[in-house]
Amino acid sequence: MKILVCPLNWGLGHAARCVPIIRQLISEGNEVVIAADGLPNQFLHLEFPELRFLEAPTQNIRYSTGNSQIWAMLKSVPRIFYNIFQDHDWLRRLLKQEQFDRVISDNRFGCWNKKVFSIYITHQLMVKMPPVLKFMEPVIWRLHRFFIHHYDECWIPDLEGDENFSGDLSHRYPLPDNAHFIGILSRFQPLQNIIPNFDYETVIVLSGPEPQRSIFEKQMTEKFSIDTAKSLMIQGLPQQKQTTTQIGNLTKVSHLPTQEMVSFLKGAKKIIARSGYSTIMDLQTLDCLSKAILVPTPGQTEQIYLAELHKKRRNIENLQV
Image (cartoon, rainbow, N blue to C red; front, side, top):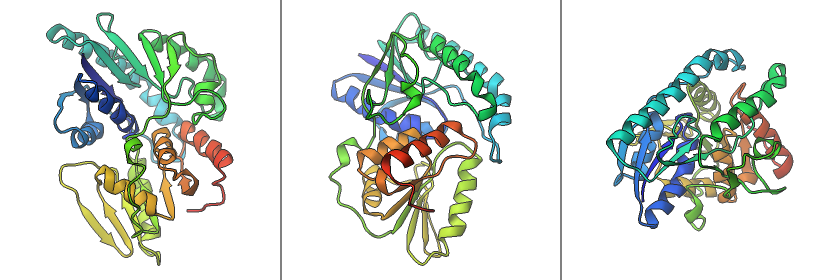
């Protein structure tokens, strides 16, 4: 089959968890075309240089610099709905020019069309709202279901039952009729047996939208550049030419090949990362979740919830940045 894969540009997590799906599709003999924008486009180009890429409409969502994202998200609502319309219209025009047998959308609400079998990937069937807007959670859940029901299938990258990793996000409310769990997804799934590299005591993995990614980088640079132990910072900036900077005992690298990154993660005594769901799946796959410090993006309710959930479940609350 000819299959179009469209990840959301909201950090690298959506693109990263599409990697095992793309690998599987290729191994089955399918023709895979990737439609992405921004950093996900650059990241997937590095992972699959042999594939054909299309430039998807730009999402262009930014966080605020403060500890609350309420106002930033409220201001973004018109842009988000415009993005949905833009994606839907872009796909409609694409399908007039070219035939696809499947479209797989990771959290891009508008990438569906009645003329093609469409699959939607999400772990966040319910959206955690800030305390002052908690009364809106059932409304937002129903709105999300409205978009999910436009797809033929909804894939949930998690385990069903008590051993799940997303908690309330996919288990609190009844599932849509077209939804089912497909297990955790990680680009590291074939790489559990990589030999650990013990060069760095701490590995810091940066991710997420700006400006919070850069703010977190500045905070971690100030702390670990003067630390007595050697630390590695992976900046989450995929590009063709890898750049490296040394500041005191901190080595900063723009991006790492997958196997090299796994080696450093497995060898580190401590990992510091955002509590994004894809990051949690990656660390669990490598059996590294127990040594991770999960630092939620300020004001991002989903990451705050996941950080607290996994502190309780995995007993990692004793670690400190």
